Each structure stands twice: as structure tokens, then as C-alpha cells.
Image 1: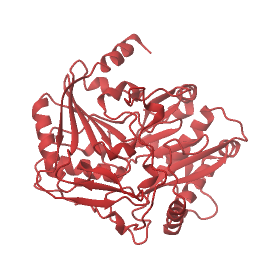
Image 2: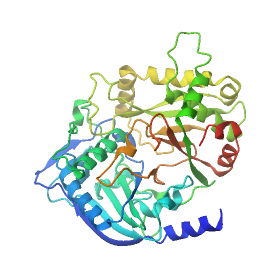
Image 3: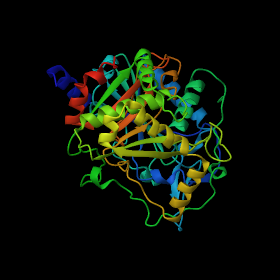
Length: 451
């Protein structure tokens, strides 16, 4: 790492907390309760889902005031985010809201020696962790912590918005629905244009009792004084954002579709083409043996897959992990359409019947997953380039940078975002063991398609 980069990392670690408050819905709502359902519960032992959005602007106090006012208004509809988790005597979890609860936690901070440009880095998120709350905090801690915490940090020329969402109550689609709605209110709309669909029991109404209860703290990320923090794993991970332009995406997709399977399958989608491109090159960078197995995992949105289908505005988790596995030698020695076909078929086969069977298996024998339970030698994709991350404009322009935090990262984790340049461009935020990342960066065929 260059001396300048070392200096910047040290500076970022000096973020100063200047205040803390809580924001509730702007009007009284009384007591509300909704049981968590089978789609929510597998993620109770994951960490809070962290996002960082960086904006330009020199009116920090005005920006914070507008954000808090808009937050109070939007929480009238998205009140579950202002609540807490609850567990009854049978071990059934729910999300509860009451007017007496604290609401959303808002931390204000200062790091005026950091510029917006400093945070437009493509390297590891460990340098950004002081800008996002709840590092190493498990979703199960929502029993006694806010379900949404945010840190608004004053920069030299802008504002860094670090957010931690409890992943046991919402997935990515719901996260960005909330963010877009909040931005709409801050930009002057009198009300939310698409209301959240809050009744989770419409998609699943089975009571699931968790015994023993989920862990209350992450033992690996908790120090002797009970303070949660993210310790480096062994071997150490490196993270980097690889930016694929429209032309690069088109080239990758065209290559995978140049020799379509003879079984009459549909052309491979943009996601399937990019997925197999990453899977093959990451697997190569790991220097595995041909007989080793490798797993590709994607968290599929089930809103339109369940029967009956749920609206896009369904607020909660409505995702399931879809896996496909093969031998390293088969993946690497066959053309890319071999792996792409495996991914395509696994996704297509995850229909309402497969979803129902997965739910029944969990309900018969609930398993609390760890965030690393994605498979051996895996490439695991979260987030989606469909999410409008660069459209979240609170009234002072679109974000300059959107990143994920350090939570829920492991060797092979990939977060996909729509590229800032728009269109079909995609940013891939990849975490790998340090040696494999170095080899991936030196892979001429892989980096040739990266800006």
C-alpha cells in the first residue's frame, strides 16, 4: 500500500462522533406487531446489512435536518424499521412497534479531512468501516437494538451516509424501496408513491419455533468488554470493486451466447453471463485442483416465484439461496456456456414447488445459518444491479459512491450494483483471500473487461 493510502486509512479511522439521537414516525401509530415468517428466519444469525452512500454538498446541518424530517415522515409507512424484534415463550420471533420505542438510531459524526473523492476508492471496505455503524452486530441483537441505525458523517465537501439494516426483517428489494421512498419525501413529495406491503403472513403463515434461541452476539466479533468489532479473518481477505462498462457487459454476454446449448434453452441473461465469467476466473485465481468442488450461490427474489405471487412492494425477506455445484476441472475446461447453463437451470428450477419444499424443510427442522454457509470454494452473489442505488436523491444530487460495509463478507462474497454510469454497466464488489485477489487482478482476460 502506498504511503498516501496508509495516511488516508489512518485518517479515516479518526472519525469523531458529535451526537446521537433517535427518530420515530412523525405521528402516533399505537402498537403494531407482525410475526417473522419462514423467509425471514434463516438470516437471524447473519450480521446487519450495511450500506454506504456518499454525497457532495457543503450544507451538512441542513442536509441532516432534512434527512431527519423526511425519515420521521417515511417511517409512518415503514414503521417496522423503527421497532424491535420480540421473542415469545414458544420461541416465535416477531417485529414489534410501539410509540414508546426509541425508533431509528441516528449518529452524527465529523471527518472533515476526508473528501468525497477519497471515498471513491475501489479497494477494501475495511478503510470505510468507521463510517458505518454496527460492525460485527448480529441480526438477533435486534431484540434489544434498533432495527435501523445510521451514521451521518460530515466530510470536507459532502456527507457520508452509513446505514445498518437488520437483515432478519428486510431483503435488498425492501431496503432500496425504503431508501427510494425516503428520498422522495425529502425531495418534496407529500407521500410515499408505493406503500410497503407489510403483512408477511400472506406469503407464509406457519409459526416456527426456534429452539435453542439464535445467538445474541457474534462470539468471534465480540471483545472481553462486550463491544462488537470485526476482527480480520485468517487468511486475510481483500475487497475490490471491479467496474464493468456497458461495452464490457455486452462483450461478456455475446461471448457466452455465441455457442448456445443444443437443448433449446433460452439465451443467457446479463446476470448469468457475468456470473459465470466471475465464477470461472475466481475459481482459476484460487488455484484449486481439478477434482475439487466449487459452488455458485445466488439469492433469488421469490416475489414472483411464490404461488400466489407477492407484489414488488412486499416488505420483508422474500429471497432464497439457489445453489449449483460442479468440479473445478469441468468448470474450467468446458466453455463458459457450460457454467452459465448450470446457473440458468438452477434459477429456473427454483419455482413455487421448490420454494415450498425449502420452506417445509426449514419448518420441520429450523437451521440457523451463518453468513458463511454458502458452500465450499464458493462464489456467492448478493444485491442486484436491478436496485436503483444511484437514483437515491434526497434533494442535493445522486450519490457519488455506493458501497457495502464489512459485515457478511467472506471468501467469495460478491455484491453487484448498477454502475454509476448507468445503462447496463455493473459494479462487482468482490471479497477474496488475499493471494487469490492478487492473482485475479493479474488475470489479463478478467481485467481486460474491467474499466
